[in-house]
Image 1 (cartoon, rainbow, N blue to C red):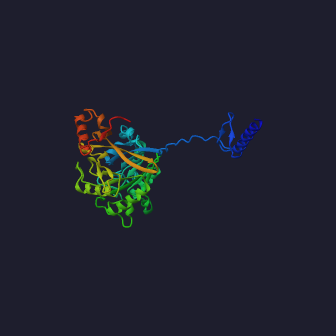
Image 2: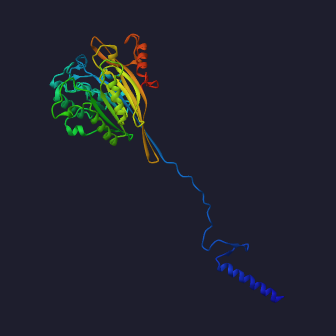
Length: 394
């Protein structure tokens, strides 16, 4: 009996020795713990879902106005003791222009200044203060390629550019030298969206471009335009073209306009801002050959001028938005939500010029003001029914 007990004790001790030597432990209840020596309990592994790519959206607004066509009646009305003050003329539209990230104006007449003599139709030269009032109103880009660019020759262009640079205004379409012309104008915004501005005209009223100085004005040349659009697309998120084309006083674009717009759409231009007809022409989307969309306003009309027929007194501010989305390492840029603010140049006896948003007009300021306004809205949206009309100060 004693021997049997002793034998049992020896067997138990031997088994315990085997467990310890194999790295096992005996827990407090005498049960084997199969964890390896010196290790920690296994942690439960939870499979985490992969994080979604970070999405970043940025957005800007761009506004554009048509011809700043400064007849003598306009600059005479602006005359003050120490120069010219155009602010009263733009005061009611300033809130809209200054509200956009970028505002673009077509400066139809060179602002060569008084020193070389102011002049009106047919060969214009305007006060430099026209540039100052645009800056004051919120405009930060001017297009200069038009049929009046060479009206007063190179001197007026050089003097105008000097003033644009003095007031830190970006200009496109006329340049001081070939090096200046070779630099594509790109506006960089605080929102991280860049905009290239190009500008071209059909001609210069028969005034020849000085030999060897084609930088003084950009003429419409399809090969050059295609090349510059390509370069601009490498430099900026979107490309905006100012095209001075069409027939004066015609309210619909002609076939040449449509063909040229289709061409620049095929080349990848994002927006076309048209001018020259001095009356409004409609807005539409044009599809490029690669499936891209180009937003087009065929003519912005006159924004400020001394012309005296109703449709020539109606212009407006065209506005649209640009959204840039960065997601999963991919960037997409979209032009969207076009809007329009019709405006009217009111004056009496060639004095007291004032640009007024049409929705604000009274019958005293324009007979049948509401009916006239509705007519303009229908005309501008005839090819784009979803076009929104701005009727509030933003």
